[in-house]
Image (cartoon, rainbow, N blue to C red):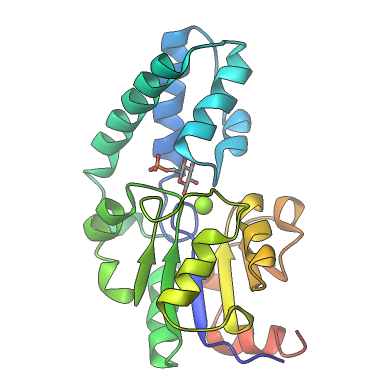
Length: 220
Ligand code: BG6
Ligand code: MG
């Protein structure tokens, strides 16, 4: 058993309810391009970088575009998304997230962010979550997207904890894979159907405590 010394959190869908803003902004773009984009389609975009998300969206719409036009559309989507998150406040922190972050601190467990988003700082500041982190690694620090382990390895390095002592919290399949590739244990936040590769799956951070985590991970 490796002692838990750091918890690394994904942001969108784990700590804050931003998935719907991403969805609305992508759906508006799809409508302008002349096709429907459903919530089911949106599942494929979770945890995926902005540029890769646009590629998936265009594939769904059966549209091929050049790089310049794609860059323009990604910016257009992001401008809309930024308008939504500018109005966010602490009411959009997901159930159990704040209590669990505080509990980590009480147990002297390091807390780091590992997010693909380039808008992470805006979200953390608007929701008041910034002070709960010892290190913040987001899409502005990384060059490879999940499932590459880079974001979590950088997070572990920033808090000076070896991967075997880190636990990753993720709502996306690609994120769980990234944690495994980083040599870390993982907790899936969501449903076991999509997150079955995680060491443990819970519906939200409300169902987890440091003691329960230590117990579940005692043998791994
Ligand atoms: C991830 C989200 O956290 O960040 C994805 O799950 C999103 O849906 C990605 O595409 C990049 O976010 P942003 O804010 O840089 O466009
Ligand atoms: Mg996520």
